Image 1: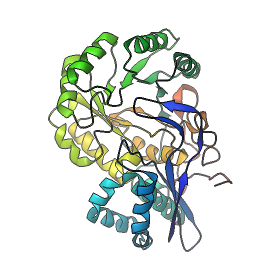
Image 2: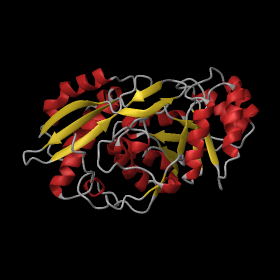
Image 3: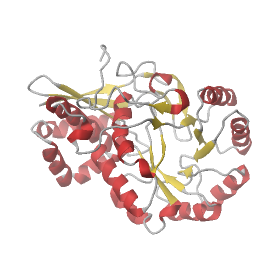
Image 4: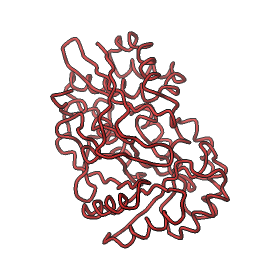
Length: 363
């Protein structure tokens, strides 16, 4: 096995902004795993300084430090064994490890003529997957334009970024509510906007809307404050930056109705870790959202389907699959992306070896 790593920096069609950062292009790493038979698997990771503490540089350094060991892996069991003894290193480098894990799974699956679902003893992909629209904190004109586009595509599930400006947020929500959307569901994403539960609670009460939930209203790791908001307002808190590892269930297991876990495959450190977190969430009665990093390519979109498919019974929403709606070009041809109604039917992937993706000729 030969492993290589390169940067992914595809430009966006327009900037994507929220309370923490504004992005103009992807910021990821691509790992390729080439077997002795010439079979090539691919994996993607999205290092985010403000989420996991990673950068492209640290992701590459982690890869370089362990590449020779990983190249000796011959099976999923070899990979699992290394994960067990190196959990702390993966905690610090989840996106980099995610890219490696996916590349190996893709390569092994192709070699063995198995989908990654079959490789991991999971059920094959079935049915359609339904994605959320995501609206950011750009200008009102941009918000209007994007909301109308999603409405025209018959989306019903919306994730709306909060600006912290009450007038702006009222204006955005009012516009969205007046669009011809049959069964509108809205959840908010505050990206760690407020310092205290009282401040966040007062602001959200003023918005006066029955939201499904709100994501990360307080500073990362403020579980008690988030719990207070949930109790006051009567809807759950979505944990994203505040939930990276399975050990963090200790903070939320006593009151499962107060929480939803946002599982982003890269953030969690790959498919196996994501599956373990989803399994524990199910056991505790905590719903999940299968999330996405801004700028993911079709590789991570495909990886997320494995987890979403296996845990449909606790799945509240799914994010991602933007493909060339957001990117100037994707890594696969055709890109894996949602269509009308926010649906994606992966019929071309079912049972296909590995990830089942076809790389663009330029990759």
